[in-house]
Image 1 (cartoon, rainbow over the protein chains, first blue to last red):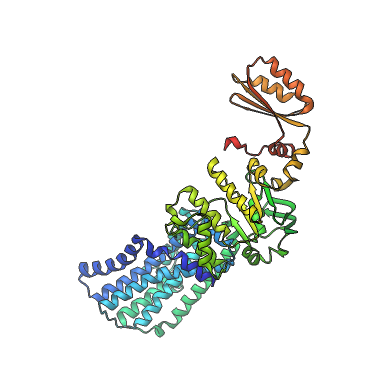
Image 2 (cartoon, helix red, strand yellow):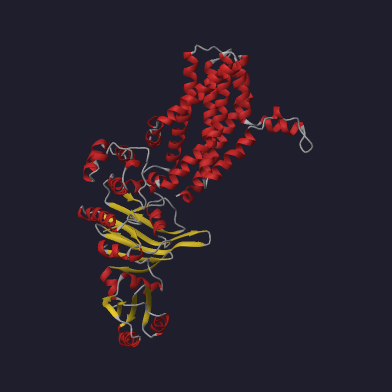
Length: 244
Length: 312
């Protein structure tokens, strides 16, 4: 309950600052329009690409989570909140809810635009929505890890870059090399959640594959999300005294 | 009746002992000053009182509850004013207060927020974003946020640090208001003048250890044979004079700043000091003799000075 109260107030800035709205609407809309005009692609394809790019942006946006918590620590509001009667876990959940809401809005805008343009895709809308929300969940879980580990702005950006590099290093983009054979690279790729999320998204948008088709990959991503949340909770409880 | 009882409290960070076997209590309706320099361990003690940090050993009982096990319940019953005006800049004054009121589970929170806005004279700014507030108004909001739960126990963690004298006096007014309402206040500070003016009892702390505790007058009375003399000369005193004064038996401390010289000494050393100053042939513009201050008490026990008020 306290987590909802915290999220209710911390997310108020989203619609208050006009530049936030501009970015949230302008980025997805701009992507779609530009792709469509420049490449003269089908609108469906443009939206598909926008959705994929959005997922990349979500992963990069995780650093923002780290920076937001860092800002709260520096302004003293972090301690102010913790000294109120809210449990450490409650605070953590509140931040997760706030982030999920903010990132979820971006996904919502993509869907609203798809509805307005009466876009059809071969796959199911519901499946696509589920995959995008799972992507948001994954990025929130990753972002909370950044938040507990970040000690400075540059450390947060560094963390984002390091994990971003690892997560966008897909098996399909490598042919193996002198030090690592194709088998090893593919094995790593098999466990990369972003790779699987993208595969699922592309499958739904372009091939009409149902979500059930990706059953083992869904389990991999689910395990990643659970693992990341558990790690972030453990890190948070371990580090919260240092964060005061 | 004791609202807070701290017994043999120790907190270590690796090899550093931040709080070392500290014991004291906070009695109902008193203003207890925790006075010590930066890094003395004051904030760590507060964190342990409200259950945000676990003690390495020892115990803290707040309203009879062990705060390391019942932190949430303790925090529900404590008002807190931090050092910096920690407010959410993207929220309005009313929203900041509402957030706090809802977090404390106040059912009629809108009414409570309206009362606090009136009490702290924040009406004109109530619906403005807090980043538009002046420094003084932010400070008001900081105290207002601490008042939201209307707790019997108020913890003020260096609420006046870095304020100019006018703002400090304003903050003192807020603290006196708590006193008038019969609240129990724990005030941490490194301003001896503040502790002297506001606190009914004082705990002197240095490097994590309590060096003395009692009423201000009691602490000073323990050093009743000590004096503080301040000279203002027409020209700068020589280093040689300062050295000779420092070397005199019974002279405890010599502070030389600009044209003034501040000497803490045993009463028995007074004639020798006066003799040396006379021999220096410096023209004395002004001289005053004071009883020992809390700063002197702190120096007596630790051999170190608290930060001097005039430096701030």
